Image 1 (tube, rainbow, N blue to C red):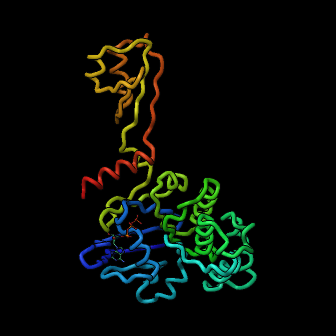
Image 2 (cartoon, helix red, strand yellow):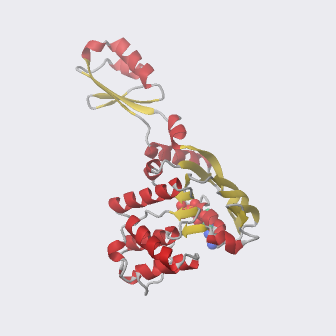
Image 3 (cartoon, rainbow, N blue to C red):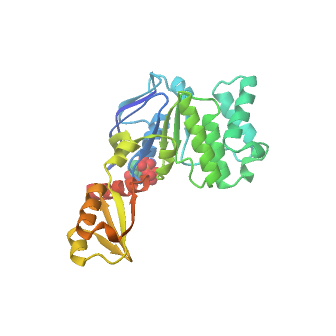
Length: 300
Ligand SMILES: Nc1ncnc2c1ncn2[C@@H]1O[C@H](COP(=O)(O)OP(=O)(O)OP(=O)(O)O)[C@@H](O)[C@H]1O
């Protein structure tokens, strides 16, 4: 369980966190999303103990990070946005190092290294030095190092940046599996379909605070669908204009929260005999992101 309450952090005039609250329950993946500069990385740095907040409190499985920083740190798995790896050692040595620092004993450590290497598609690379890896491969090592000791709280800051599709899929599956085992996962990304894939809750940060916390499905439910209708012959222009339809080649399109009602009204006026096709595209996570982007620019 991760609980952050009323965090504040200033850098001179810049307010990076401004009353930031977030709770992530065991078994839950929360996608923390928001524009560049919304405070996501600052929040993760505060939780992982790299940064001291001016105000507020964070507990990790009930352990206060300020009162017992070492105990709290041992309960966390952190993959920061900036790569922080030792280039001269091998991938295996890396994972062993992180597992040992977290207190894993040799037998279990060996097993966990093999398991996480398999999950993150790193098995073939275990004996390569980090310096010899590509950017995407290094990021995978960083995520594996966060997972290796099976921490109850995971903080992953844009872990799929630069990942190819197979790697992205493997990473999302591994993260979801850790949550299914009971971990609380806080995951930042600018790519919302990843959150859909992990059945993640969504926390939207704007200007240093979480303004919305809901399921993806409920947030999507507030968005319009796109309705596309084709007739055998062009519909009458006055009919099109009156219904607020857009004409794109031989198709009528409308973005609407009530596709059924709009379709019925159109067909009622034009007659169904000429109808060739109807398609409804429900809102996607990309639409949600665009909506958020608009709302954020309006709030600025
Ligand atoms: N070391 C620093 N010194 C001064 N200002 C900083 C520092 N670190 C962050 N900030 C400022 O704090 C605010 C929040 O930054 P933060 O990196 O937390 O945003 P973010 O939501 O993670 O953005 P991104 O999506 O780009 O990763 C920004 O205005 C940023 O410029």
